Length: 269
Length: 110
Image (cartoon, rainbow over all chains, first blue to last red; front, side):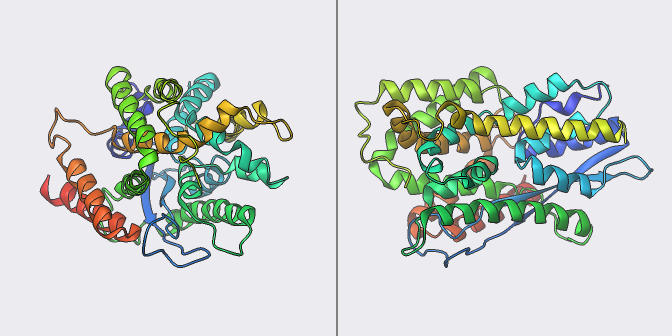
């Protein structure tokens, strides 16, 4: 069996099943996914009403686990990845790169395809980050799905500098991610519950944000465009290749519908 | 390790650099001090809800309607999260209940 079988995998559920396939094929390494779910009130208490502030998104902990023998990747490797890569899907995917014969070009291509959605996040934050001076380089480096969604849904508390608030979200998320890797690596055997399915917290987070945005009528057309383009592209291109076509389709339809979408009222706060 | 430490480090470096590239591209195209074109300003506003829609689908792309359990756990849990959120509008409650429901469904029911 081809030891690269598992390499085109992104979703959590699939990763899990593929993880075992991979381990069976290549018994020198496998990885364990553990998840923890952190809520940090950060600078304020969780809101009782709208807004997504106060919640920190689900954190997945990635561990390259030793499997017996002297070969294998201990948790320092996971920490290294969490610190410098800091992107969930890419870290899942990267597990499959650590085998002989996997070319650097493949690594670049696959990583790029998985992460190309970041371009979107950057595009909608260009103006705000450009006001943040030197800090913006760290903001760019730490721009993840979760950080982005918090930027879009959190209200800056009164009397707090917007750029400091955003910087704190980025830095805390980064810290939690790295800490999560460390704790997971050290305490992985101490957690007794079966955590299968806990990755759904991420889906639930996005559903919650989706509903929140839906409450504002002006967001509805773009939301519908986003969902429809994604579903159609998913059906046409399949789960591994649909993100890039989806992005192109979304941009096209957003421009086609520009007149209908009342741009002044649609905003990422 | 199946490959050398040097190569492992090189892979991590490449993954990190490629990921950074995807994040930095918009900021290289529209650097500080240069006025952001109107079209990009427009995109900046309307992309957010569209991307959230895409992320929901992205998270659910692994589910299958043709193989057991036919996406039932996902559909039920997503519906529960959405309805609970419309009803109570409490983020932690919606996410927490939805996740526990999903875990129970896939671990014990399906």
